[in-house]
Image 1: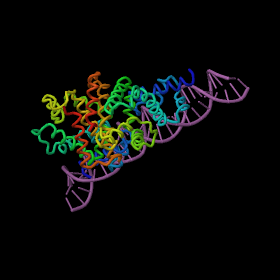
Image 2: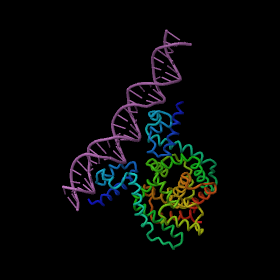
Image 3: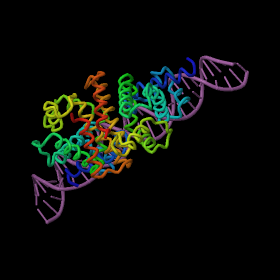
Image 4: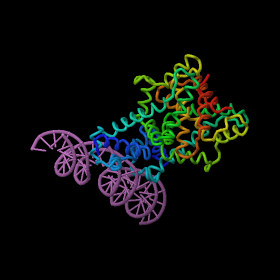
Length: 191
Length: 191
DNA sequence: TATTACTGAATGAACGTTCATTCCGATGTG
DNA sequence: CACATCGGAATGAACGTTCATTCAGTAATA
């Protein structure tokens, strides 16, 4: 197996196992086994488990961003842009349930808290369409005048919830239901 | 120390430590130490750690339910009832941040998934005001015609989010902000 | 004294990480 | 071409630590 392949196998195995069983239910030995490499090999690519997890999240973000921004038109009305982003996000989660489950784990962990802090304070990479959209929406009085964090909660809290319910089999999302759910989120944030 | 006090001390210590450090960051030995009892004593009151965690959640639910239902008037309009419940819930979380953090941990774990399944399918104790309110709201065409699970997500997803943001210090909730946030959630679920 | 409650050191399983060793393709040599 | 040498990649047994749980002994209680 080529060097790059090994790394990819490790990433794939880690994503699968962490998504399925959580950080603490996915020992390094198990990840190594599923990746088809020795336990020590992982440490040739990642300093330790924490670093591996953060790197994994970063790669996920990189993969998902283009999918969500695909077809996004900054010149369209706020409402349309909002609907586009939220719809794309649900579709992404449904299409990649492993990604969703990993992201969920990540957000509900100390890593996730730090990440959210960076996002909200904007201390990291400013290329955030969501934040831009919300700030513009507030200043142009199209959206309710809330702190950004609350707009995030109103917009994405339900999205994460319905995605989880779908993935766990509590509901069956289809295009119509998705559209109506996203519209409901818009009702929450619009003025 | 009396027998009942010991149990209470264990419950208190477990809640504190799990809320602060998560399930995996709160070893039984540490819980015992903070409770001022021997490590083995915990096992006189709880069969094992899993059982203790589930029992802890049950007790939290029992404590919080009366607080949230206090002043709830089933005869009032749906909107008022909704605002009452959601406002009470935010206040509860803010007033008892340890409870919030424990509940958050719990929901994002296999226990929480099982619990949600029971809630949605109604296979457990039917005294659930939320479910009643939503079902009534749908049938009387006051609320959007969504599966119950989605209404839960629209109503409580943002609530959990803003509570977390407040507890973590990302935002500073006051009565006005709470009222406006809850109103926004109502916008999401109302027809 | 008989019974029950409590204790905390002991236990063994599980974990992340390390490191002495093996492996293997590239390079050098005759 | 055959063979020897080399060096980084890969390995997985072993290590030290941490944890939930147990249990033999002690204290409290009746």
